[in-house]
Image 1: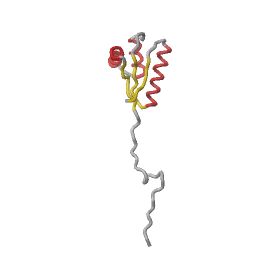
Image 2: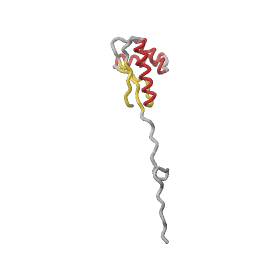
Image 3: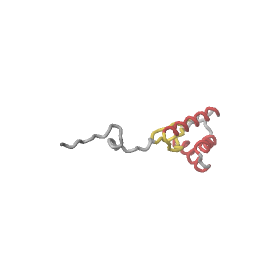
Image 4: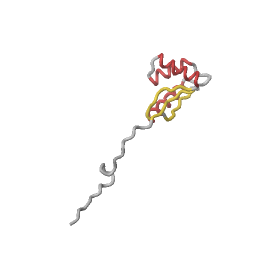
Length: 104
């Protein structure tokens, strides 16, 4: 009698050896405008990104002089949440500060 070869069942570990990929990462970015006070930007960076005063000031100056500053790099869900929180907080305080996210 001949030997019978058993194929792995679809969807089992024996069938596929896919590697687990790390999640896509996104930069949370503050954009410069001509109206939001610098101290408010520093406050946002400390409140939502847990930066100390020195780091928050560095990022605020990047926003001011370069047009944008990176607040941090996060997974999509966390980045979206941070963007929403910052934009809501800025509107609540009547500032046009805009926070966005872009793929890292």
